[in-house]
Amino acid sequence: MWTKEIMGMELLVLVEGFILYSFLGWVVESVYCSICNGKWINRGFAFGPFCPIYGFGSIIGSFIMRPLSEHVIWLYITGALLATAFELVVGILMMHFLHEVWWDYNDKRYNYKGLICLERTLQWGIVAVVVVKILDVRVFDLLQKVPFILGKYVCIGAILWYFADFVYHLIAAVGYDMEKFRKAEGFVKEKYINFKEKRKSGS
Image (tube, rainbow, N blue to C red):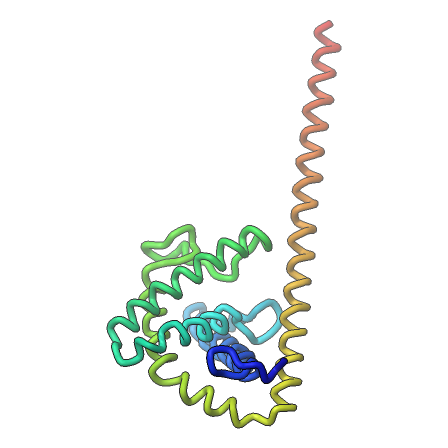
């Protein structure tokens, strides 16, 4: 399975790239937010040092935008728009399924529901140029030199970690839904009892 090729690259190398970019995204996000807030802020996926949105965005985006590598302006514009659209979709899905989003742009100008903002869109364009023009070739050349067994077990460990974190948050979200349901049920019962008492007192 791990040696299966997708768009000319082994699945194992793609997963390794996803993990590495997720980690690099965590480093950049955590350092940036810590500097802005004057204290350490962990921007990781739940408990792990990963930001999966960077992993998915970098891997998917690099394949889509690679043909634009010689056209920096178009690369910047396309990367900014694609990353913003991806961030919006992920944010909406997180709100729907997990009832939380791990970023908030409500304090930024020109934001949409705190999920995307102009400042971040401009930054995504820079990230796209850096990833495609500078990092991609070096990262994947490096990953192809990683011993197969080592890469395989690192990927399996990271996937299990992701899965455990996702299940944890999913259970928490289900518990949140049940709590809302119980509160709504209690509210309806209270209104019904009050209604019956008023009818009795009126008669």
